[in-house]
Amino acid sequence: MPLPPPLYYFAAWTDSGCLCGCDHYHMSIASAVACTSATACGAYVVAVEKGEYRALNDKEEKQFQFHMYGWGKPEKKKEFELLPWPKPDPEPTD
Image (cartoon, rainbow, N blue to C red):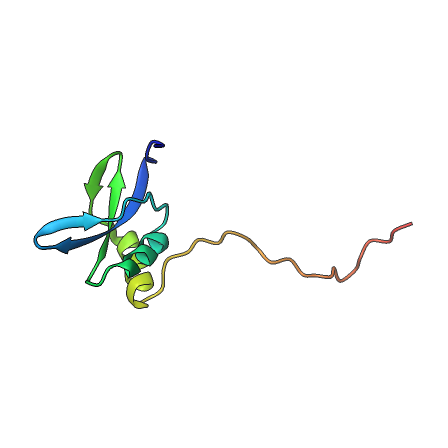
């Protein structure tokens, strides 16, 4: 079995007073939320950082609320810029 990454998320829920969860290493909160659909009860996402459980920070919590309930907007960084196509003045080709 591969080693877990330094930071990952897992879907968690309780059943009869026990903490239960999936056994996947989700790299995103959205992926972990998708995994909660397999449960028939309320679920949450827990962060695991360097092998220690921790609560979601404010940014992660906003992402969780958006993906789980559609509330708010997730914070996104600009990852790319659309370029105009075709170029207004294409370079001549010989």
